[in-house]
Length: 453
Ligand code: PHE
Image (cartoon, rainbow, N blue to C red; front, top):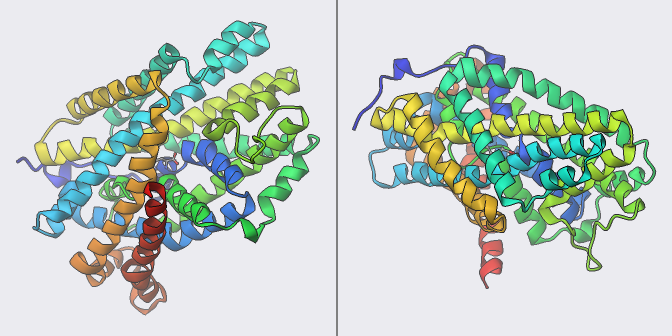
């Protein structure tokens, strides 16, 4: 086995650069495509509340755990666990993360491809070519899906090849602020439309009778996916961090950014849903389920853009889907970076060879899914909803009982001088050792048992 010299590994150029890159990994289709649909399907405000709690009480402590493991070992997830403990089991936590990442990326590319298709759908719709618009907007169109998924993979590989600070850091620094601005502008527009306020009400006023085990399971899984946790993306990003960075503070900024984008996306899509209902579009089935399911965003937003019937509609539609595509690419980068860093560190491959080979294999998987989009639900259930929280539990147990929180605290001390006297130290320790694993474990056991029984 080959171990590349850790001095040759990339590093982030600046504190802000890292936060942007990690926030770029976190902010993606999870926030804008998945979150609003899950919120709409699970009672709106009640989902939002459980999601908020899950991001900060479970996601944030685990994000700090991943970063500290990564920075301390300067390794990919498999190598990181192996460095901290010589046993046979710890590296498997890393491998499980690698597998989840590969499978998530394979369907993520297809959904990212949908956003690119919709850029053209909007453009052709307004240019007066409805048949073309329909072709590009058809989510089941296999050849179109395949072309766009592969294009997304190519874009991802190009950025990965450019390296950590030149590629990943530079790309995300521009895309993230742009995304924030366009979301705000669109919310401003939606709120002027008739019916929007009803959506705001559903989104912000909780109905506690809707709180069920399914809501909690869904919100928990969504927080892992959205914060890029449980599969080692942040171990990998942490491995490029300098000792000067305060990991706890950085993780807090990433979590709050990610939560804010999801919150804003819900603020856009749920009111837009009620506007669309007012226009006669069927959103819910008679028994209260979403007609479009996870495809809600692709149903509701184009309807709204089309109803604008002006140049502003094209512009908003095209700009929105371009930005959604850019948000997706900062996430696909982090998904691919995990297996790439593994073969670079552990098997001595060059970055280029690693990116093309692994990227190529995942692109093939995404082509298969392109022709059978029904696979997305199954892969999502196994490798995301179940896979990531499972990874999260293993990371907590490993850090709390194998590597031990005292050792992690010594690493966290770099960049966080006051840690020993602060409330952070006991609170984080209790969350990692007890609260997170127990909470995830209990939600998990009850729901997974329910799923299969
Ligand atoms: N966080 C990304 C999103 O919300 C998806 C992702 C998951 C990225 C896991 C990396 C690792 O879209």
